[in-house]
Image (cartoon, rainbow over all chains, first blue to last red; front, side):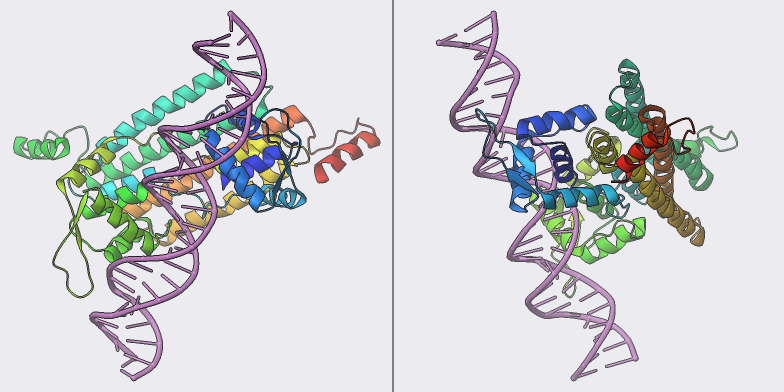
Amino acid sequence: MSIRHSLLALLGRGPAYGYQLRSAFEDATRATWPLNIGQVYTTLARLERDGLVRALPEGEGSQRPYEITDVGRADLAEWFTTPVEHAGRPRDELAIKLSLALSTPGVDIRAVVQRQRTATMRHLQDCVRLKRQDENPRDLPWLLVIDALIFQAEAEIRWLDHCETTLVRHAGTPPPLPATLPAAATRAVSERTTS
Amino acid sequence: MSIRHSLLALLGRGPAYGYQLRSAFEDATRATWPLNIGQVYTTLARLERDGLVRALPEGEGSQRPYEITDVGRADLAEWFTTPVEHAGRPRDELAIKLSLALSTPGVDIRAVVQRQRTATMRHLQDCVRLKRQDENPRDLPWLLVIDALIFQAEAEIRWLDHCETTLVRHAGTPPPLPATLPAAATRAVSERTTS
DNA sequence: CGACACATGTAACACGTTACATGATTTG
DNA sequence: CAAATCATGTAACGTGTTACATGTGTCG
């Protein structure tokens, strides 16, 4: 539902046609989440069908501008008024993956955590670099979005570290190999985690 | 794609039928993300169509157990090996909403932030309470999931606070009304943010 | 003119949700 | 037996992605 409401919000600033709407959306988020142009038109059609939006007769050339209706404005106001519920959010693939990795035989969870940590760390650095490159405080919207990504990535790394310490505390197999173990045992462990 | 891989991962522990798979999934996440049973069957059908899974002939009563194939195992291993990319994640509705609220006339962003903060705070407390209730470290998978939710909620609150301070610094309209402003100006401002 | 950006649309497909329909098995 | 739970499936719909088809305007 986020595209639907996004287009509605953009039309809340005034009439616009599909192509403009995509540009405006990608301006606000700086192509963090690219928006396919086809989706814009199908979504506009659905919005019109539902009476939240109305096609304007004017429009020079091949432009078909739309305008938000009163019903649309009400829907938009409700969107802004209602907080985003956590219950309605998409499933967190990473959390599910680690949760399942933990109970699937033959999976080296610590390796999964490590690889994810590397990827997330790289993403975090990309975000920070992007933010520095473009520090002008003129487009607040974009700054807030990139900050959201940064906060999320930081939280993810903290969680991954938390996972690792928790795993070490419970499932054993700590990385500094205890010298007291016989060689056979350590070999068995590393074989299991490498396959 | 997360359900597809989740079912595949569950079948990686051994053959199972649809109903079992749902139970197993909701065990791992404790119904944080409820899984509709219908979805299980359609997903299983697609997995079978793609050769990742094979229906077993046996099965007592009305049970139709499935088994993971070698192709499926390869796909599963790749899932666990490949980190979850941030580029492929769903759009962050909250970030988009605040970003758009900032550039939509007639929207009181600070109110939006406040309402969201309240909702997220409540959600965070729910999570913490849930975790305390069920502190037994026996099912690690569930603990990791609830911790993920907690870390995310904390990050969201930090981000919302960050948004508010940023907004105050830029767009003005600080809550402690500066006594130096003439009454007319403050009235105009509060009218704009209230409508 | 030819290439390129602007602009609109459609078709096919994957995924997810909800609701409904239908049996089989257990248990009070 | 009746009700609840177990178990499988289908239909309809909304949303999202990708790819394709088409036309317009501009500029070198």
